[in-house]
Image (cartoon, rainbow over all chains, first blue to last red; front, side):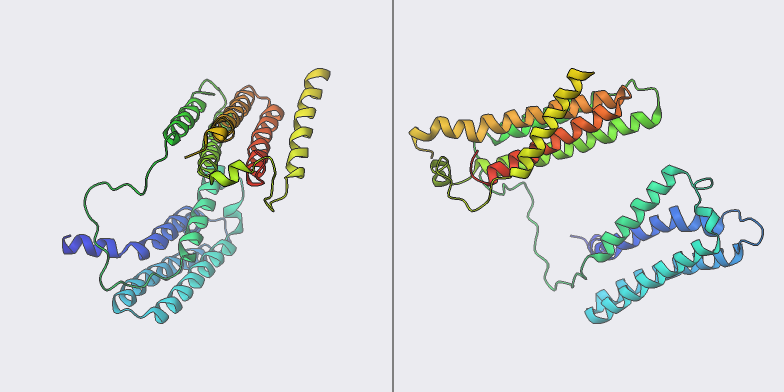
Length: 247
Length: 67
């Protein structure tokens, strides 16, 4: 691997929280700091603290790169904590300087959701433990390599689930209202994720031991029967039938 | 290799039931999306809840070693 490319890859642990933080700052802090402010709203202070927040993020990224190269893990963790709190505190003060900037009138719903996602991503990326530098990184060999033997029939499950999930995406394309169209898309995408998750769980059960399967009738497992879930399912089905009959 | 006496049992437990549950969940989700597209939010929420509860129930029943 060429040296410059290797250097870029080594920036990965630093870049993840930095890019997420930069995104959160650009969506939620910068518009408050550098946007139009009503008279007496502390516009200068908001701009100052928005810049300070960016500087805190930049200093955190720079110290991360330098300390990671020198292998100083303890200092690295201290700097990360310091830069996290500085960034969050400066962002908070920016918002306090002009609280109306985050009001629904001035902040669109899409930007609000984007900002929320940005801060969530930043929190997840920053919560990751510090990755210590590895002296001799593992070599990556070219070519595909199977993780293990694929049991017969698994491909059938994957293909059927993929077809079902793709089929869900065909629904709801003629909806006129944009909000409702987004709701339908979110529902179908979420349903697809749930179906793939369920498919994974089913595949795991398919590879259970034969002994477990043979003793199916005489259950000896300590896991209790999910009476609560069964009751909820029966109640839901009953409520649906009752609703249809009385409609 | 599954013993022959359990082959049919295994086919039902490991293939037919999970596939039926996947099909049921797909149907409920599709109905939910259809209802939401039509403006029937109550129906949409109902069928999403039904699919989630059905999948969860099946998963817990399988974990209990019954199905």
